[in-house]
Length: 400
Image (cartoon, rainbow, N blue to C red; front, side):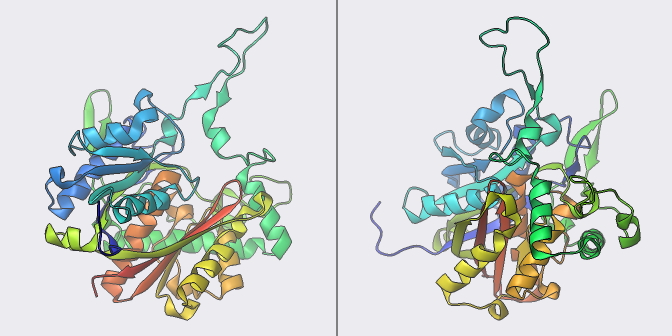
């Protein structure tokens, strides 16, 4: 498609489901059904006829139900966009949600899409077990079932849990358990405040979930935040990954299910359809870091992004950095000089949970919403990635 100039890539109408605890409210729903619900809600919020959407870009990191190997296409069809629309599945570990937005933007930038749906979902509560040695037969003896969810939480190089890499980061840079627990308690308090103020509710689309044998109920509010997570109580938790360690269930991200979507398109294309863009994608940066300290990833990713754009920390009005572990956020604050009053003001992975296919989209929705309501200009979204990467994305408010 010939183009006279590079389009300004924007996103709009972000919507997510409430996030359900592991084994909680969303465990009875297929991943593609939860995703289609969020996708339909996004299109409805935009007020855009579904036939105007020409591409689905979707991510999920652990196949669950039979149709999730084809999830991008299945979610597209279930959400009501045209069958003629293309479908693309992407994965970039913990940054998969950001990658879905970025990949949709690249489709638009290259002229292969005009308006796309970009999002992700996880149904970790439905993650299956694998019996790896049965296809060609095993001579005798018991056969071991392997937890596919366990695969997602281990470094592929060392096979240590991701939490152990957080221990490595805490040890290498001398972060204290007390500071990590304080962050965990703050995340919970900020998420609860975000629920109470209605901020988080404004980005969610309630969903009917099974209740009892034949009934249903409306699931409306994030299930994971805990009002009893004080620093004093968190200090009593045992280390989760290492004897004498500092990383606990209280200062680590939780396992949750859900889905989130945004519309991505050229700014002028969205506006021509009557859709008011929320923010534009300015630039991004991806780096590799030693896998054994993967939590270091946001530091060089954000630094590299700032170098590329000529901006400084003081130019950025808001930061969303995924709380894979509290030490990741403490490290980014200390190394980069990020002010805490501009960082994760509505909770994060510790309080809301971290479903990797959802997290980046949730962060983009939250940052754009914050910029719109607070009147800021720039936000950076960043996270560490399992196996040793960091990713950062810069967005600019279009609702000032």
